[in-house]
Amino acid sequence: MSALDPDPGPPPVGGEAAEVLVTIERFLADQQPGEASGTLTRLLEDIALAGKLIASRTRRAGLTELLGKAGVVNVQGEDQKLLDVYADEVMTSLLGGHGRVCAIVSEEQAEVRVLDPDAPYVVVHDPMDGSSNIDANVSIGTIFGVFRREDPTAEPVQTDWLRPGRDLVAAGYVLYGTSTMLVYSVGQGVHAFTLDPEVGEFLGTWTDLRFPDDAAYYSLNFASLPHWDSGMTRFVEWLNRDDTPTLSQRYIGSAVADFHRNLLHGGVYGYPGEIDRPEGKLRLVYEGAPLAFLAAQAGGRGSDGARDLLDITPTDLHERTPVFLGNADLVDQLERCFADGE
Ligand code: AHM
Ligand code: MG
Image (cartoon, rainbow, N blue to C red; front, side, top):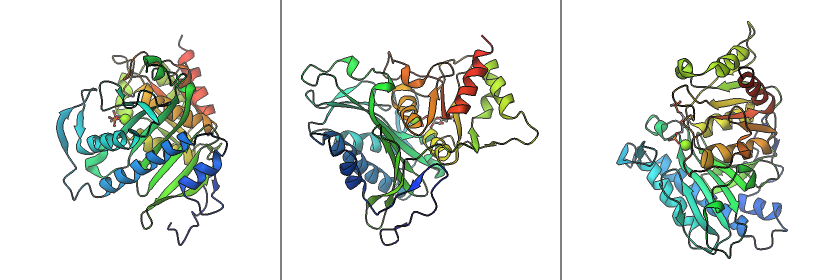
């Protein structure tokens, strides 16, 4: 798609094609005309700009020796790739200094960074999700969530960022795939924009995305099957209960990309807890909660297997949780499979 050829093609089953050619900036402004200061709109525009910069660097990664490791280990004990570091720096530098973002929580930083103590919003983000896929030229993404502080005049406190996903006022992701797409919600449906590299703008592609009723995929890393407990085993049996399964299996290993495909085609993504690692791998604050917010806005759900991910109040910035995201009926079924063993 380009600005000169604005037809985004047939919409996914659960969405509508954007009716007019619109930039993300114009769409945001039109969508929230009542927002007194426009601060949240500006903040989301800053994230869109960060997405463009990261997309540009991602496209040239193989040429600029950005592939490979930065030589440091992040707070999760994982190798940081150079693109992780770059994406983290871009997000921080674009979000700070405008009086909009009080504090930022990042997968790549051990501590919360207070940018502007008097500002009204807190941003949580995974600047480069799926980074183990970078070397192989596989889709990766930036996940973000936005909280509004209850009292911006007060000193920033832990409860400004250790909050349940239900308190998010916005969430989204930028997916660096075959094209770059920004998908977001401010609590009024889920909208998707595609970066036109020729004009450098995110252009409206689909509005009001909804998980289609007939799900196509489930996304699980079956290498971990021996480590899953009986609830997961029951769910896998249920998924494959017929001779002719209705769902096909797809697993990219970039949560944001797996989520995006399942949002368009219907399905469920899961990173379960394991017997020796019941907390799983993914992080609640900047992976599970923002994606669960989007899932709910698209008619789906997020769960840790027993609780709605949006209802969990984190006690630690980097808290891990089992994560299941997708069509509501599939997530409901998964919870039943876990509950059956209790
Ligand atoms: P990351 O944030 O360090 O990239 O880790 C999270 C990623 C998810 O995007 C993905 O679903 C998962 O880790 C893949 O893990 P595994 O290789 O164990 O299946
Ligand atoms: Mg991640």
